Amino acid sequence: MVGSAFRRVAHVCVYLVRKASSVSRGHQHPALGSRPAASGFTAQGAPGGVLELLGQSYPQDDYSNLSRKVLSSVGRNLHNQQYHPLWLIKERVKEHFYKQYVGRFGTPLFSVFDNFSPVVTTWQNFDSLLIPADHPSRKKGDNYYLNQTYMLRAHTSAHQWDLLHAGLDAFLVVGDVYRRDQIDSQHYPVFHQLEGVRLFSKHELFAGVKDGESLQFFEQSSRSAHKQETHTMEAVKLVEFDLKQTLTRLVTHLFGDDLDIRWVDCYFPFTHPSFEMEIHFHGEWLEVLGCGVMEQQLVNSAGAQDRIGWAFGLGLERLAMILYDIPDIRLFWSEDERFLKQFRVSDISQKVTFQVHHHSTSMQELLLFPSSASANTFPNPWTHHAQQHSY
Ligand code: FA5
Ligand code: MG
Image 1 (tube, protein in one colour):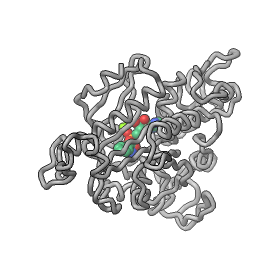
Image 2 (cartoon, protein in one colour; image 1 turned 90 degrees about the vertical axis):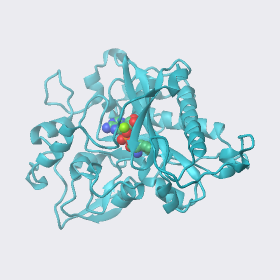
Image 3 (cartoon, helix red, strand yellow; image 1 turned 30 degrees about the vertical axis):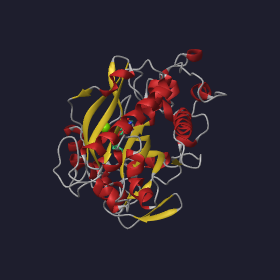
Image 4 (tube, protein in one colour; image 1 turned 180 degrees about the vertical axis):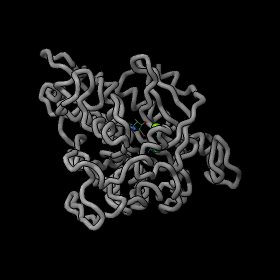
């Protein structure tokens, strides 16, 4: 039940830090140039070459590590394809935020952006979010770099700073994100995130509090597990409550009341305190989002020093898998009509339960990856690559 949502679970997560095994794989990887030319994963070009992507040219250097396979995923924009399950979820989240949160003039409070290029600077993806220069999440083996300066975003948080700097107080960003992750039924190197950010003025946050005029946002104290050194406990608790309530309402809107969720304490360099939401699904706790109270240093550097806010980033595939009972994340890339047509509904809120055995179709057929592998393994070129080159 959603009632259990506020149960805290002692658990630590670390933003973008992979299991030791996958981190070391990055180190062991042979030089990019030594990959066989026939492989779909061969890095394009070499230092001295130029990469053309989405109408821009990027000089290559020894950071460049995009494979042909990943390049072919850039621009697919599954989240903008009408009736694709990721589009359906995006539309339902948008509808919920538009209806639920109305601004002063009766207009939607949250602005929605779903068309930003996935090419960002390393400053946007890391530095703007206070991710230190030596943080393991910057590893070449974990990201797709166009060159030293440009990369495919590893999360939609890469756009937070720019939108705050532009003066926005409430926004959603939807986009494809890229990580050199190990593949299994829940992880894929390209997936989709939906980011939400909300800043509050003092008036907005304390408006509902009786005798709240004397309350403050800021003080000089020390950082604890519960708050940042510049925040008052009152402000943080109200922001945290609003964040968890907003997200609990969102998942209740999507899934209905009959859903078991829990909050797990967590760590991100750009929020404190930080949390993950997990949903109980098929006997397991599945992490669907990370969130927290925004680091004030980030908010200040973007020019909103009189505000305090929350941010969250959720995985669209994870939500869609639970909502539509889709058993494997690779299915989202299927171009098979038997998969896609199941989501062509007249009303975006209509219940859809994905049928694998529709007209005796097997999972392998629907995944539509060319296979030379045995019938028992998922025929997936990403994994072939990992096996051949042990990266
Ligand atoms: C982040 O990416 C943070 N930027 C989220 C955030 C935003 C925190 C704003 C605080 C404030 P994380 O790496 O945990 O965090 O990813 C967020 C979500 O993306 C996960 O909860 C999960 O739902 C989804 N996700 C992560 N990796 C994968 C993957 N390889 N495949 C599919 N979904 C994934
Ligand atoms: Mg996480």
